[in-house]
Image (cartoon, rainbow, N blue to C red; front, top):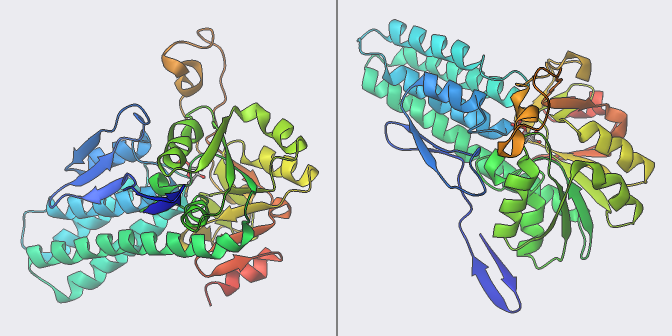
Length: 359
Ligand SMILES: CSC[C@H]1O[C@H](OP(=O)(O)O)[C@H](O)[C@@H]1O
């Protein structure tokens, strides 16, 4: 990727969160960013499950991509010569990886897709090597398609931006959460490539600090003007007139347009409405789940208390204190100005307009 500043063209290669290493999955351990860049080699579905569950890899599309390669690792573990047994191994691996995290629908979308592919392959192929090679090709396709989809989301969201605009975002919906470019951050990269001066305000996003550790890192690496905020500062920044748009990613959009995203998003949407600021959600169609009727039906992950009580490398709360640590919240569709996808922008009435995306 590249951008021009002061007449100088700068090129850089953004970090890749998930890639295939021939017979293993390569994961960038996002828990260690921004201080340490550590790539892990994973050889078993169990390692992939743990990588997703512990958030070494995180972000809805990236989770789905990692899980797809995890299923390939499961297929490679089968040593027999019966396609039916290989298929059962693949199905068992899919069911296992589906238990790694509950909210991001891309996990289940990717697992369903790779399982369906395996079922079709087992009808026509009998050689184990051929079966595994074809399943790997599907996982690679999921990854490659996500990169293209994210770029198209960026292109569709770009018209919402203009020179000098202040944009606030929450958590990390950047290249680290996807195959490349990200969703909410994709238009920021394109705007910057085209010489547009945007000012991004990134919420730190407690308790896992994806905004501080990942979004600020990504945007600084790209030379984009980014200001880091504590999560309690958004209202003041909006009241100063510094923000003209909020754009976030999502982990699951319900059929009625309710949006599950990182905890704190709902509050931002209410603040944006109160200040007359548009609130945009950027996502691929693989994050829109028409089978989930409303936000009330979206499973919300609760994570360990230690994420809150032991941040910053030291204890930050008394032992034994009760902790509530939901990783996501749901923004009702009436707070969502528009949802930007690879197929274009969708606005209310979401129940009918989201359905049209799949027709
Ligand atoms: C482009 S999906 C990004 C989405 O995923 C994040 O959750 P987590 O870091 O817990 O995987 C967050 O909700 C982002 O908006």
